[in-house]
Image (tube, rainbow, N blue to C red; front, side):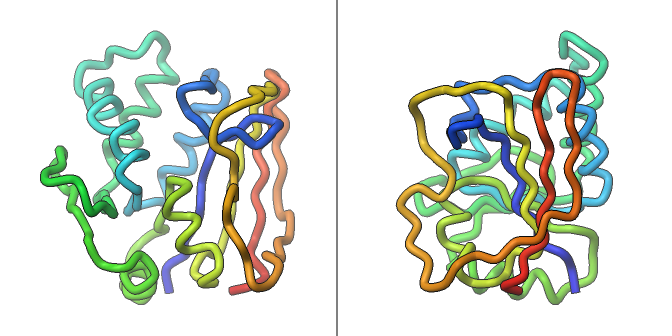
Length: 188
């Protein structure tokens, strides 16, 4: 059975708005290493539109300001497949990108049963639909050392019938003061 992870960057106060956060080379290197074990990204529309075509273009043109940016872009672009859950998108870019219009829970359950590497979920809307389902095996948070004070928050507006029980299995502190936290879900 494939592992499903939820990966996100956020501020200390829980803001997950990527327009308010920026990563440094060390953070990008961390995510580049994670991408080597992933063969499927699953995004909602907003996350997809933040990531594509930006990162594939950087990968193609090697237009990042640092080597870490270019390597991150290459690793992102090398992932085999991207699924985008959307009711409003008509088309998507990318060699192996597809729009999915079914319920995320049904599709992720089916994908977990297939052979392959890890499935990485990105996007708050998808999280809100999947968190209570028990389909997410691992949660990875990169916490930036900043307080934003505004923006969409992690788990904002999500009502759980039971607590989400997590076990911290890894933490990495970066020179910037950022922290990567990896939790296993005990609700699976």
